[in-house]
Image (cartoon, rainbow, N blue to C red; front, top):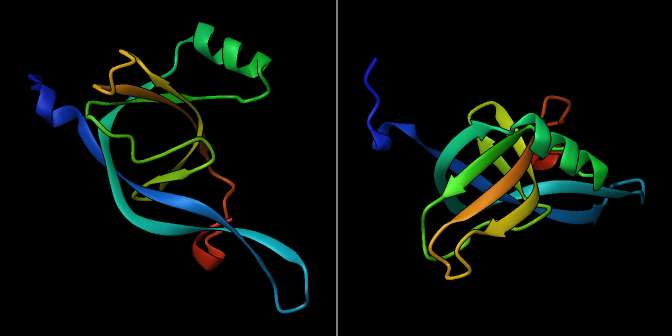
Length: 118
């Protein structure tokens, strides 16, 4: 199978964390779409990277490499790719020039889709 670099790009919908109060007065967290899209390449994290991030109490499962001049997501944001959901645990500006960045994310399967998410 022949893959060109453009075939690997995926569009992730960026959602920001919002905190509100439920009808019974309890604090609840949910995610709201920002209208922004992060275009990047999704790959599995290596065992070394997984271990390193686990030591920091922020487990990761994947990396997303974005090749752009501006970051559209930050730590704590949620990225949606169809039915898959990724939580941003860390961001690394590779070149320190804003040319590209690596997002260290954790894929979660236990989210609730009420109010736009858990």
